[in-house]
Image (cartoon, rainbow, N blue to C red; front, side, top):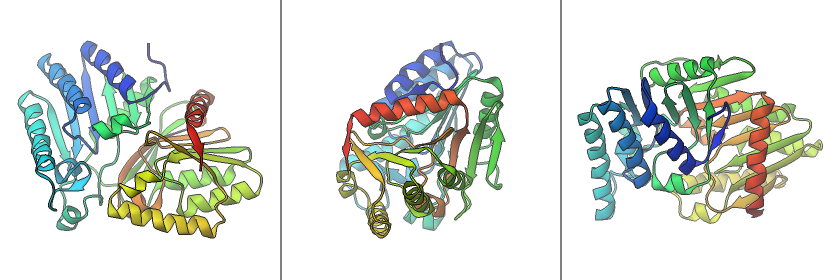
Length: 343
């Protein structure tokens, strides 16, 4: 039985949602920025198609990024034939779901600038909904993401699931200021609506670190940067135990040009701050986004770096002071730390 705040890595998440979907009577819904034609993705596609066949409401919300890119590379630019074939398969996958009765929403049709730079203005949220269980996920639907270290957080409290469903339903339909949604107890959903240069989630992360007196734990693809790194350096100076686990640097050498440039800028800032943060490298790649400080937790889709804020991405995180979630995320961090090495 799934309990509130249970954590699921990608493959256990797939197994769990598949079991839940077989028993679903009301809704099976998934939202992610990336749906690439890979084995894990097709299993979710099958899950949705089987639900639709049983007359269960089946919904897929896919950002246009999935149609503009293949394996995270822009489709406008020359690419190997195999990659072009994979791009066609993505479109075929969308049509297949629609023919099977799945409601497919393609979010954020791109402007000309966004076609040139697909990272701009994307819906970066990841949501799962199956009847009375909701999931706030960190991972996209692709083989790469299912090979990474990542988590989804389960929500089972009725008020939290209802609020998550409302966020899911409004995807692509509303433009509003970022907001904090009360989910009962001491838990909130923080929603960024993609306003360039503005992020309620990043602001909350900065506040968490600024107020920390005991410890800060960071799990992310990237090292912290911008205002958040400054606050972490200050926290370390005042005696707070600041640690983090990130993806090994070799990943950057294989990354897109924009990520390599971002990491260069970040490295210069870290050098200017004296490289005071105790970071460990993890293999396989980290894709989870977790921040825990004292009795506060933040987990979800936001990378908590300034580049996403200025790219105008839509994001969703859970913010909570619930000790159960804090304990589970600290346990997750401890497990990752056993498999990491010092930076």
